[in-house]
Length: 53
Image (cartoon, rainbow, N blue to C red):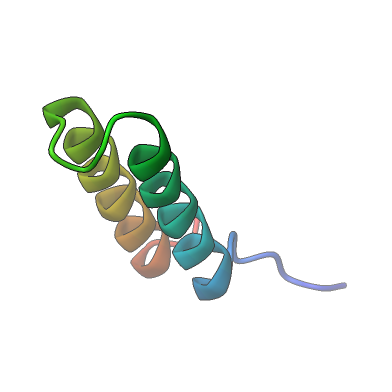
């Protein structure tokens, strides 16, 4: 049986990179909304890296 520890570090980094790309293409990174979304995703990704539910 394989233990699933959640998304790998690469997948979390890819999610953050995708959010940054979306921000650049839609509104630019100067938008407070995009900055908040990226910051939240970084925090959630970091927590997922330390806590295995």
